[in-house]
Each structure stands twice: as structure tokens, then as C-alpha cells.
Image (cartoon, rainbow over all chains, first blue to last red):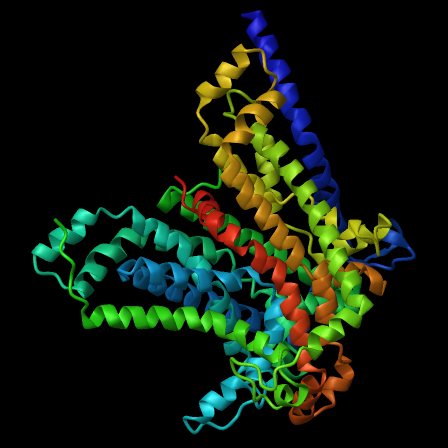
Length: 301
Length: 295
């Protein structure tokens, strides 16, 4: 018996040692910066350091909430993020259903190959592509011109920017997001479709009464998990597409933090804005995981 | 006996919609390739569709003459190599103990709490920036590699995969006198090739595509990673200057920054991703499914 316990201790020591390097990195680059958030409550001056800077309590947050821009930025963030989640899920589900209904394996394979590709390209690259396509004399404007539409300055227009941001992200991710639904559909019993056919159900009925209900748990799960993302409007995309002309509709929390915190070097204020977002995101994420666990039995570990 | 069914109108409609989806995703990419092979004026006037106009390779020739592009390309290559190696080592070493039952590893719970908490909460970019500055990592390639050394999400993916490997294999190795490190290397790793391939590819893509860390941590031109360099070419307009321009002027300004040359750079920077894409496609579905749909 004693031997067995000794053995377990030796094994566990190995486990601790294996975790050590990773935990050391996590400590240094994730936990230490958490201590750094105290500067959100200071008037931080780099020369004085964290321990020498003046403590100002909640001043930075008060300033934030009185800033008229802030509410606009929050609104932009929420609108863009909710748009992306809603349209993104809808498009992914529709695409997965179409794929499931397609009977040609060759066509399926070809289409899948092309729709997964944008997910793996960076927003830097895609922004170059988008600005080519969406420029004043670009392909999109010429195409819309065929239907008699006036050319638009899509990327510098406050009327269009949010829609472009949402559509751009949906375009990039729908294929990739469809994978979970496609996977869920492979586990549907083909006998169900056969039986429905014998009962005289047409294709639409089969989609509506067999396919959709079968993937409903996955849809609900994804919806719940996405709830944790409604403060994330996607920094990389916005940062590469926006310009001062569309700050009014396109500026989101993350881009604002970058500009005030790092470009204008208002370290304390930038940290305060970032912390505001982190705290809300954390609550949303924790809540969504909790719900996902409760309703879908989903656990991260 | 399966009869070959007739092709109905619905089948044609579905095929049509799928083709539209597929083309929609390819058109921006093909358009960029076409522009990169077109002459400057046609490109700037937006006349190029999916086929080059006045085919030429001036854009690519310009790349060959540009030292900066090669510097940046190799900074990115180095970063991918070193970053992915570090990512994988740490991911494997962390995922294995965390995949153990709490009965076999009593402290697991505490480690898990820390990892999950860190996945959901971060201090924001400003404290991270100050830390990197204080560690004297500014303007070194380490600023691009070390802060993201542990890809927490990948650790969880691999941990879930390891959990699916039967206990009996481990027990057999224990009886043979193997220690946990030997078990990990000789039993678990050979059984997880698909999962390891997925995660390696994810790390490669992440490092290759990252641009923001290069933007905030690197000052010297010759140390800029490729994506940051391309980003700086495109948006190298002074914000104040831009704010004072009319939309027409701005659009013109954006056009003038030589579409052809930038497109050629974009195409070259996409090549590594396109090269590994067949492997990515083979593995990543397993990756997502093992991560997302799990009871």
C-alpha cells in the first residue's frame, strides 16, 4: 500500500514538472499584466513607475462614462458584434444544410475547399483585397452599376461601414463556422430520411423536420457560446478597414483602447477602458459557459 | 439496390447556390491575383476583374528588388519556426498532465482553474505592452514569440484528445516501468498524430498571420514581420492628413499607393498559407470537431 502511494507521488511530481514551463510563461505574460491593471486606478507616469505613480481611484472610469464618444463606441461595438454573430450563424447553418442536401461529392469537395480558405488568411491581406474590390471604381461598384446604383465609397462612408464590417466577417468565417453543423449532420440516421420519403415528405419537409431539429442542440450551444463574444467586434478586421472618416460608426472598444492607450500614450485611461471591456467580457463568457453546461451539457474540460 | 435518382429542379438550385458560395469566397482572391499581374493604370482605374489586363510581372519584379520585403519574409519565417516549436513543446507538456483524472493528479483542478480563468480574462493591451517594455524585449523577435508562448485554446484541444486515449495503454507502459515523460513520448504522441498536425498547423497560421504585435513591439524596419510590413504599406497615411481630405481625395490617395505592387506582395505573402492549405484542410475538421462538439 505504502509503495503505491509513493509511486503516485513520484508520478504527480512528474506532472508538476511538465506543467512548470508552461505555467511559468502564463505567470509572466498573463498573470503579471493582471497586476498591471492597477494603473487603471492611477495617473500612471512611465518615469515614476507603477509604485511611484499617483493613485486617483475611479477617476479614469468616471471620465470614461462622461465621454460622449464612449457611448457611441459601445454602440458600434455591440451593433457590429451582434450583427456578426446573428448573420454569421444564419449563413453557416444555411450553408451546412445546402451542403448536406448536395448529392455530388465532387461539387461538395470543391465548394468546401474554397469556402474554408478565407478563414486562414489574415485581415491585413483581406483588407487589401476588400479595398480593391470596394473602391470607387472597383468591381463591386461596377457590378452594382449594372443595376443602376450610384457608385459608393463603401469603406469611408458612415452609412456603409458597419454593414461592410459585418458582411466581411460573415464572408470570411461562414464556411469555417459551418463545420460544426456539418459534423452534427453526419450523425443523423439516414433511415429517418428514407422513412420520411416513404411517408411522402418532400425535400423542404425533410430539412425542416429532420435536419434542423437534429442540429438544434448544436445551434443552441453555439448561440450560447457566442453570447460571450458580444463585446468582441473583431479588432483585426476593423483596424485594417477603418479610417478617421468612419470613426463615428466604425470605432470599437478595442481600436479605441489602442489609439488612446498606445498611440496617444494615455496609459492609465487606455488600461481603464480595456479593463472595463475585460470585466464585462469575463462575466458574459462565464455566464455563457455556465448556460452551455446547464442546457447542452457542454464543458470545456 | 440503389436506383440512380433523377436530378430535380431543387438539386439544380442547391448546386447553383453552393457554386455561388464557393465563387464568392474565391473572387476577392482571384481579383487580387489578376491585379498583381496587370499594368498599373488599369489596376488603379478598377478595370481589372478576374483576368489580368495587359499582363505583366512588374509587381513581382519590384518585390525582387526590394530588400525590405525579403527581410520581413524571413523575419516571419523565423518567427513561425521558433514560435511554433515553443508553442508545441509547451502545449504537449501541459496537455498531458491536465488530461489525467483528478484521482491520478490531485492538483489538476487548481491548474485547470488558472488556465480557464486566463482564457477568459486578460489585462488588455496596455499592461502587456508595459510588461514587454520592462522586460527589454522591445524590438526583438522574442516580443513576438514569448508573450503567446502558451496557446491556451490549443492546450485544451490536445488535452481533450489525450483524454480519449485508452487507460489500458498507459497502464501497460507503467508496468513496463516507464515514467510519465516516457509514456507521453512513446505512447501518447504516436497516437495523436492527427491532433498534433492540426495544432501545429494552427500555430503556423497564427504566427504567419499576426500583424499587431509586430506593429506595437517592433520599431526597426529590418525586424518587421511580413504582415506588419504589408499593413504599414497600405495604411501608411497620416490620420490627421486623412481627416482633412475629402472622400474623393482619400479614395484617390488609396488608389495611388500602387495597387499592382501591393497586390503582388499580398499574393506572395499568401503563398505559404496556400502551400499548407491542403494539409490544413485534411486535418482542421478533426480539430474543430474535437474542440467544439464534445460531451
